[in-house]
Image 1 (cartoon, helix red, strand yellow):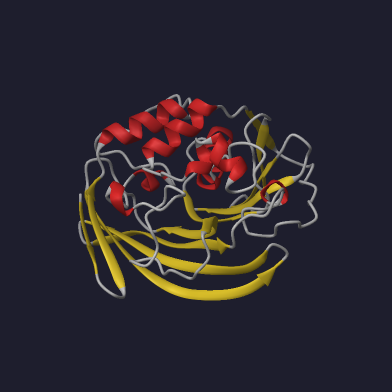
Image 2 (image 1 turned 120 degrees about the vertical axis):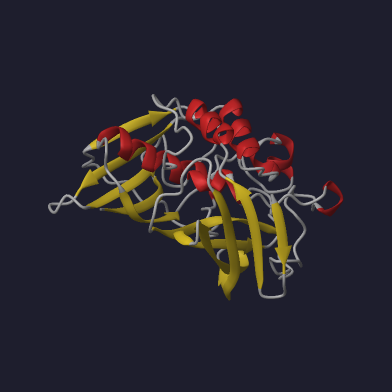
Length: 286
């Protein structure tokens, strides 16, 4: 893997090797494993193109320190808030690929938890001269946690937002019981050092959460995994998701979906053990 960064863009080259895909298939209890030449399932590209910062360049939260490619906005906490992805062509196992990333926008806001900033990053993934994936990733920056603040917050930064009931009319529903091992495996596969996913003392004392936080990208992936189980052979062309409320270890959650009348538009959502909406998503099929 090779990484180069300029003031406006970052390029990372990687081989879509079979081992990470096989490991995620095992982690998600998939019945089949993509082999060399097979298309990666949607969102599995997150296993590749790591931001492999040296240990000395990590911040206290386990993330690479800000101020390089990602800006330093004077807000210490950050996490994934959502994204929009278009799958133009298959990204196949064994391919040589390049991801070109740019910061598209920075938006400052005042939220219930204090100052917020939303950074949108664009990724373009190419293989064999073809753009396979275009992605916009939303990252929220937040102020340091106050006592008890994190436990009420959504991953989108609304620290005390009123919870929203999840839809009740699912065509399919899959129950997930998160564990420390699941969170560890996903952190390792995505080279995600954020301590809220594996360091319980840090999650509670430094970020104000009641327990370890289930990765938003993992939930987004589980939503599409549930779609694939419900609709075998479906090909996803577009996907968007938004984190609404954090999901914590210690309770199960469900990933759900329903088809529209045209059969191409899929509504997806995750809900916690109390029935509150934690992530909303939409997929468009080919």
